[in-house]
Length: 386
Image 1 (cartoon, rainbow, N blue to C red):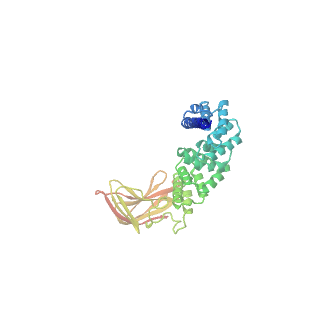
Image 2: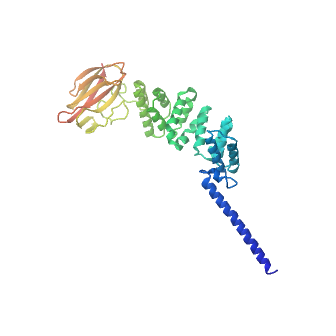
Image 3: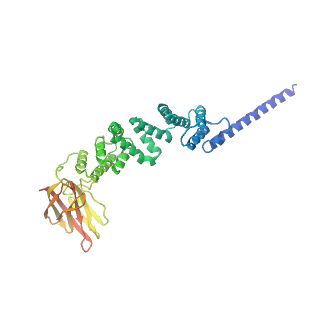
């Protein structure tokens, strides 16, 4: 007995080790199968009992999709099991939320989707469901809080989401919430405003919204926003409103009341219509300073500088400097109808901006001679009311 007892104990230990390895091996196989098939082939993954929460959730989702969005009894049972076996996963909560929504239990569905969002902040289904639900149930502040995450998850939805925000901004009951969200300077503010400025929406509403906002923290972003909204308002024909918005965004300067700004070209070209703009033209060199020095080699007339003049009535236009083949040309902003042309020699011409125009483009135009060259200096442009 002294010799056989250790052998019995050794055999028992070996059996236990083998059994343990078998169980461990089955666990490895099962977990590997669940990981491999839970998403792509959940029905296969569920054959490795007990079925994992991810496999159950994906199987339920597949049934719901196949049924056109309806959660049948089997899908609901799978969802309930998934919730118990994977209580920290977002997918079962999302499926339960969709089922609750289909049942008309909106409050329960919202709670489940918010819990899913907490489990997985990058869940697109939960985020977009909540965004839609918050809008439908007039929870405007919560809806706008979802805009940034939704855009970051799926940038391709930008246009649709901005249309939603724009519609909220157009409604009196939700306009304040949109204004409050934009005033907090979210990372989508500039993109929203500049996108709306180029969209086919009410420019007056956009201008009023922009005027009511504090400037963003980034001065460059503030300039881009203002420029986009200004040009949108100009394109809509609201020239006086656009000019007022431009003036409100800058300190008052001498000569603001004059129809034309910077007649001596002392400032660098700007990017808004109410100061001199410098269109890009091949072969053209400009040198602003105390006057505008022009060198141009080309085959066709070119606009050297342009500025939008707001107003109507009778004016006097003159152009001073040295050189030839440069004129100041005034034209109606609505249809480009010519209103007046002043040559560089210093002649003064009369001009009328009709009420139908509301504003006019004043352009400095260089026209090459037979040699294809223009060399001139413009030292003073005058546009005064007659």
